[in-house]
Image (cartoon, rainbow over all chains, first blue to last red; front, side, top):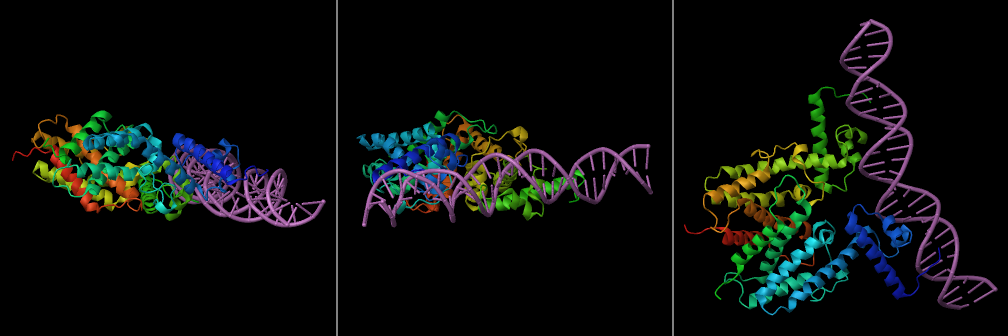
Length: 210
Length: 210
DNA sequence: TAGGTTAAGTTAACACTGTTAATTTAAATT
DNA sequence: AATTTAAATTAACAGTGTTAACTTAACCTA
């Protein structure tokens, strides 16, 4: 009833309160299943209050995803300090897969749901900031490995390498998240599939004149 | 107003009429955006009539997907007659990718939306029927290539090979379908990514003592 | 052939959705 | 002390999937 929030800082607090409530519900029950009224109830506001901070549900989802991409970047950051470029590349990939599989609903929101394309201009994430931009981290890791001569001589474009390896790992994660319970398919153990995909990338990419 | 349909055959006709109408709309506008009323209007019935043939929207979607899996199997069938096992394997993969990219919304319904797990007992598709079951086709193609000694000696499990290669190709397709328009990423040409993924699989898998 | 039964199809209605408009009300400003 | 401002609310709308109640034409039996 009364206006409780006044200063710009307090508004930011409420904004992130909404985002956190939405994330918890989205992650537990899926984006489509969660209603604006439920998000609002969880923080003790009415549904329409959310519209004072986000123009619609899509924008709220995007804010959640933005924060989660940040979380992914943070999860991957620890691997960036590994000194050996090849080892760094491998660990980066394994951490990526691990993040996806331990946070399947976060991962689904980020990379598996059809939402409007992400515009860097509207995002809260600073593009190319190595602390925040996970995609930029990927490009860096692969580029560094490439400069260090890790890859076979045939490969000239580290960005192409990065995008292809990403696709390979994404396929593993996405298929598992969506279809692990599908009785049609007699899935081999996830670990075996991960290992095999890594081996495949290694054998195909790595220059092994040690 | 009057009961128009009587015989079992006529009921089947109406059933597939509903499925076809739903598919057209799902493919054009996405599953979530399409309403039961719109599906019904397209075939000149009232919305509640659909519930005489499908228990709910989820079951209708599943019927559409079933029919589309059949379509995928049919699209892949032509490659099964290629005599050389390696060439058959390669062509199978390329046809799979091509199907996914020319029918992105079909593909999304089949492999990228979170629906209840598929139970072979409830499906209209005959599991292990090489004319209908695309997954079984995949396993066959890889197994045959494996028996023919196409793969490197280290690989002992053709099913594991098949699932990993599937994941690699799926990652390519899924990432493209969902994120091709994402301004965050400076995508390399799709053809280059496909080619590179194929090369990667080849280099990693194929026994090249010709 | 008359009359009741069946079931395909309908309209009406329910609980719920995202969202907008109109309204309240406490603080900030004058 | 009166006025403005804006945070928050309730009321309301158009639309959703779905269920219940109702028609009504064809079929089955007497």
